[in-house]
Length: 304
Image (cartoon, rainbow, N blue to C red):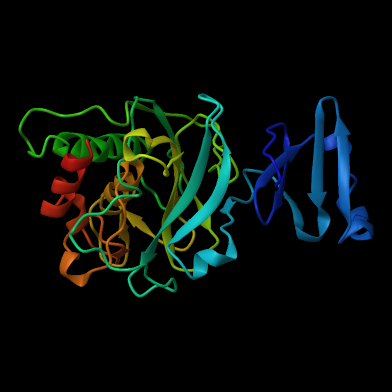
């Protein structure tokens, strides 16, 4: 597995984003001689292997693409493997949850028996961590709106955790957020102890947004937990709106669904559950996922 190293220039392979020192990279025209060769760069304390057959150069500001595994075209849930949580030093597993346009390419997992389901029974946040968003996007969404809307959408789930919406009691699940201008990277190889949200291109056709969650999903339910979440919203293949405009994805509608994954909720594919925020498909102009439905409320209440 390749490992993310953040320095200056960016190298992108099919499995991850890798940053390496520019003085160790030959000019792009010379790379042709090394296609198909596994090359190892030696830095103090670091061995970095790069397969040049699947290697391209880019800078964060000129090309922003989240490269999903090919199996994402066949399933809306993709297992990313296991790694070590840098904060707790525990072994954790990662999953990518892909929110597709209604009628998208990916096959549906089995239908849920009720109108709520979980990433894994008992897997939830057992501590509070902050999150960050780079609100820069190509579709004209105001930066202050993106930050405020994400915070408001999180508040919906936290408000419903006691089983009563608008009851004045909430559970702090995802903590507070802040806006930054840094280039963010969704962690598909291992967690980095940061919960990040940003806009970019998503490689899988029809994918509106992707939420990546790392945690402990096996063993006794009482010991399962979530340790990190990242989100990417596709602003290349989709137009976005703050007001439910036709032929555009409503940001609040999609973000409320994605944040359901962040708190531990799973997708639903039973058509009788299509009014739930966690229903697995969305369409342009849709706004019904903005507000949690009865199954969403019952599910988050039972989990927390």
